[in-house]
Image (cartoon, rainbow over all chains, first blue to last red; front, side, top):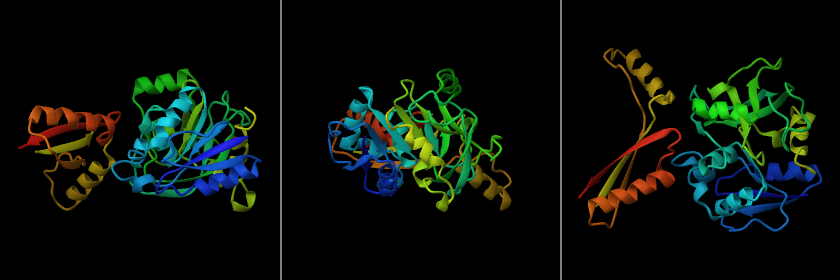
Length: 224
Length: 80
C-alpha cells in the first residue's frame, strides 16, 4: 500500500505519520505542497498535522491555496482516500473537502494531552477495525480544534453516519475539551473517502509511549 | 486605492476571545461594557482606479481566502 503525506511549510507531523505507516508495512512518500499532482498508484493521502504557514490568517487557510490542494481535490473527487489529522483536518475543512470549520478552543488555551474518544460510526474505511462505542485513548494537541457546524449540517452528518469520533472520558461519557459542537472530534464526507480528526492517531502507535490505540484506526486504511 | 476589510465571526457563532476580553474589562471596573467582539482587519493597497471594480475583486478575495464564510462575515470599505 502506497501512502502520500502532504508537507507544507510549517507542517511538523509528517515524519511521525511516515513512521506510523511504515510500521504498518506501507510504502510512504512525502509530498511537497508545490507538487501539482498526486503520484500514480497512491492509495491514501494524509494531510499531516502541524502549523502550515504558521496558522497565519486562519489555521489551514493559506495551505488551501497550494498547488497540491488542487490535485488533492481531483484525487478525492475520483474516490481517492484522504485523511487529515489536526492541521490537516483544518486544511480539509478550509478547502471544502469536509463540512464545518475549526475555531479557537472555547477556553482559549492550547491543549496538549491524551484524551479519550468514543467511536460513533465504523461503517467506513477508517474505523472499520473499531467497535461502535469503543473508547480509545489518543493524544490531542491543538489551539483551534473547536469544531463548528450549523444545526442543519449537524443533522446531515448524523443522518449519513459521518460523525466518526466524539471526545469522552475513559468510560465513554461525553467530555468536551474544546467547545466542539456535540463534542465532535472527527468526521468524514458523505462519500466516506475523506476523513478528518483533531486527535493524533499517529502518535498512539506504541504502549511504551502511552497508547497504541491509533494502530487499529490507521490499519483500517490497509486493504480497505 | 486602498481596501479595508473587517472580518468577524457571524452572529450566533460563539466568539470566545470576545467573551474573554469582555470578562477582563468588566473585571477591571468597566461596568458599562455590554458585549465585545474580536475580529481582524486586513488592509490591501491596490492598483485600481475604479472603486466598484476594486470592491468586486476584494469580495472575491474574501470568498476565496480572507474570510471563512462558514463561520465569518466580512465588510469592505474602499478608500481612494
